[in-house]
Image (cartoon, rainbow, N blue to C red; front, side, top):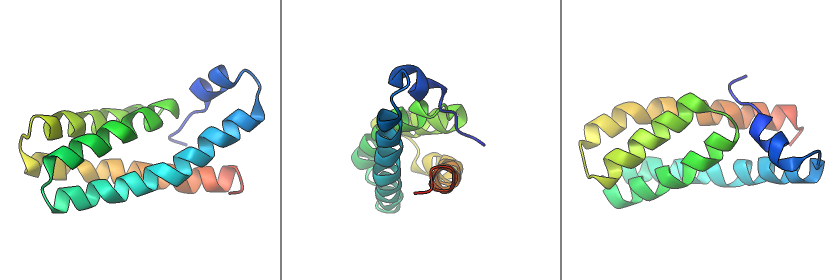
Length: 112
């Protein structure tokens, strides 16, 4: 398992509906943002790359996905500074793999 519910559980203080809500938002938004990020990379749209990586980062952080958060943060920084697009494209596959794996695990673990 590459995610952890520790941060969410701490925030939820036993509120199962809150936990379910956070998981649902993650499952609804992050795959769409990831798809948009992939498209932004194909179009070499630095502004969109920055914005979407910035949006993904807190979601993966909330699930304790440290490596994924680091990848999103690096993509965000490179996008904001309009740095080397090739470097962003090297980092992106690991972000995509981790997010897709967690989406699948969450759907299975929460029967969604």
